[in-house]
Image (cartoon, rainbow, N blue to C red; front, side, top):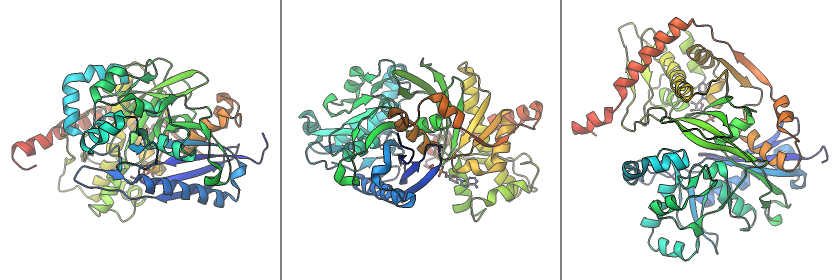
Length: 503
Ligand code: ADP
């Protein structure tokens, strides 16, 4: 392989599509990003226009090539990563989507899922590693088949294809030749058996999904197909596909059992490598991390719905800060939150509580409490939720010795120090924070021999900064106990409102 070639990662996120070009080192040599619209047809419903997503992805690719000053023939391979769980259904012949993409955040399937929870909780948990929730793909497919006129009949005739967004992008990039999904994305659908690595007949029946719609599940790192030459001006191998959080775990070089990463974005996603055997826990999700070289790696995942978004809320809804970085200055102006606790249950609580009726609260206010205490309590709440997940990981018998971090809010040094203190663990921030794109690039590059091995990748991983815990264990545990009390008070709050006729 020549030295002047590059790997391109396509990162199709919830609000924008990105393309990032890496060299072998790996350093970022160019990138492009294009936002697309968020469509909210009703309260709690979230959609994207698949044509707009596709156009945004193409624009991002073109801008990335331009910023790297290279032509498409210099791209040795493409790796795809994406917002997980979001679904698109399209016509097999015309390639036209039959409905908008139904996004992972969309709660339109809440009632349908309540029924699945009552009747099939154990079936879904044991086969898919997931908790039945509107978050995942399968119920969204069922909803579309039941609510779009004539769609079920067309699907039964084999005219309709299903995909998560990675599947749709790969299908379009290959000119409709490849209809595939990798195991990590498939493992977020509630249709995929993570032990047997195939679509599960019983689950397809429960959700009424015809098998003919489904893409072929494949390992994450292998050649899926080649880009249609007239699209990008070259026929480039697409040789990686992986869900965004799993990609970040890989991009953090967390290849050994017990290695963990936490991505602090809108929400926080903590994933721990648990090796080649899935492990069931009541409070966390078990998911396929990746599959390469015939070997599957699994992860435990704690999905926290609100973390960085709480800081945005402080800025946009409370007007407590004018820009996001101001929180660090404000929260540093006091030595502690002095008894003020914040629970960011703004959309209910995810792992490990899974309470969609929890609501946010600020507690412990006195006349001495001010903006800075609230700001600090918000940062602390992000760290406490991470500790909740780590405690659940420990209960599952997995020990963690350090936490690698990334995502927009990981830039906040005070938050990272608080995190180290509240966990009593070393926090390590890498040189390249674009771990999601990097993970997808590694998947693609390893498949075509651009990089040779996991040990080569491990040796290239570099820390930018390490945060060591400085708080004593007594204080840490006392504060954590109070946090648990605050959470208790936030649980089921929406039910109280409902009973009083206020929600
Ligand atoms: P996503 O991919 O979910 O959109 P990003 O990784 O881009 O998320 O991170 C965005 C989040 O990071 C926002 O919710 C924002 O509040 C948070 N954020 C950005 N800068 C800071 C900062 N300096 N301190 C704390 N949080 C920040």
